[in-house]
Image 1: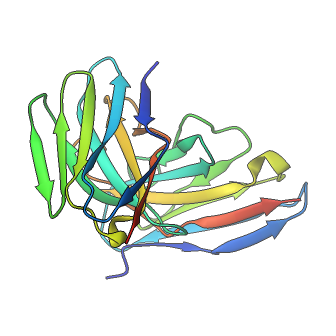
Image 2: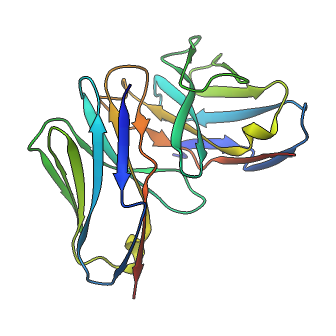
Length: 109
Length: 114
């Protein structure tokens, strides 16, 4: 059975304090790994797709990386507006995406 | 371009009542999905559709039915609501199979069953 585990469950940072979120997965054949951002009361918003180990993608203060067992979402010098829940999901070609339970990020000014 | 829209935004049902959630997308996407999101459990797939007139079961299909009579619409029905169906429901769509293109999500419907 495909499994996706995100850690930590919650993370509180000071503005400018860089950190990383982890998404570890156990799947039989990864076709793609997705990162989404979800604000309270809203639907998830797409951030990145990674397809193979060693791949990296960047968007503003966010950088996603992928290995054969896990993905990291690195947040550099975060701002309060980066506060959200970050979701990781995997696709193995069976049905649709399998999501992790997310990391709630709070960035304090 | 509204993207993915869902109606209603909120609903309170009594046990045993029925209702239909409507999802509409204006991006001409082939694939559409219904998820539920519960605290600590992430998003779980209820049903999905790979094209007009098709539907398939996801991870947690029991107690729900779906229909996709038009390409742009995907309906989720609860025939006899139960308190265990209290959740936030999200609809999503994608152009290709999920591994090849991102899914776009609607704003969600918050359902409470008393």
